[in-house]
Length: 448
Image 1 (spheres, rainbow, N blue to C red):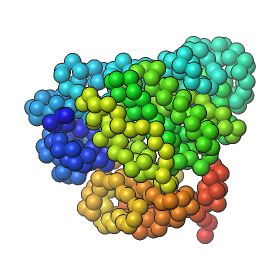
Image 2: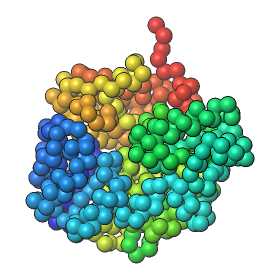
Image 3: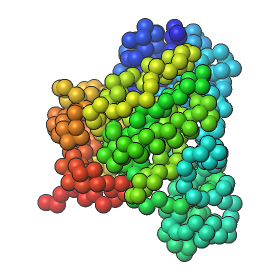
Image 4: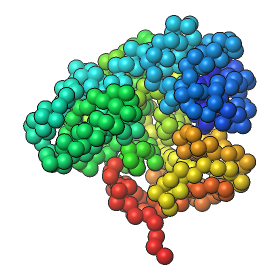
């Protein structure tokens, strides 16, 4: 087992990893930018190293400084968390070359799933259902029109190196194709340095369902059931839950088997997530694979009573997976609390937190790195906390979440708590009648 792990991340995920490391008797090293010098992950790690000024490129994406921090602290492993360098194949390879264990998959595994075209080809060979679309990149508008006509409108234009909704466009008819193709291409080039575009059939009224997987270096792989991540805004998840209120036992079994096929197709080693779109007819299609821990791993942990970070560390240390094909016990819901003003189209709202009271009680978990007196910096993702509520049934979990959100008091900045409270009262959400387009129709602001 590792003696010392450096966490190459910040915020709540850095703190989350530190907690598990402490329980495993592993020393920790926090890295931080000058903007995060007062963050809790810096306070609770055994050691902390400043790796640069606030811009991410100069700190949390500064590979040279992170590797130097690992060297001077004698860390024998690096946990990347999520975001930043978590799915950077070059960083994974550099760790391997430097004899420092990257707690995640190999560079080859990351590369095989990082490019969406390659990933789709791999899934087809593995027998995993995929959305009909182009066999590779679509190099011209002429080819795009030809393909779209063949598979039928509406279609989805996607950036091959995409993520976070960038380089994605829905096209409902041919007259809209050229302008959307060019704008998606330009956005992809600016965001990822790769303007490659491909086209798929647009899945109507889709649910976003992901399967949690784990695999080890001995060829073992399993799934730990699903999460429903369909409540999204601009392709960014807002609420996640496990299990999905939409899946049947038969569909859960089929999707779990498909996720294991996906993992075994690349000899996957670590924890990860296979993401699917499920249409209104309950047909499912592979979307992408995230080769890292997810923000929403907590809902799986709650219904499985299983520490996924611990499993990830043990796999990286060469142990066999201890997880098996678990099935959910009870129901868990997670609300992401962002420092945003929902009354102003969710504009970022950084600033000093003057007062903070987090909810407590049976079945209520709050993962956060903020505290009273903490200043939320404007330089990073706006998520400041995750509230996860667990109960015997979905109805009880929703009621518990509503109570917890009412008890969550933050003064000094605006947050998305009012939005989530309104959502917990929405009839369609309560009935489980939603898809990824739900927020576009959700009028949560009451008129005076």
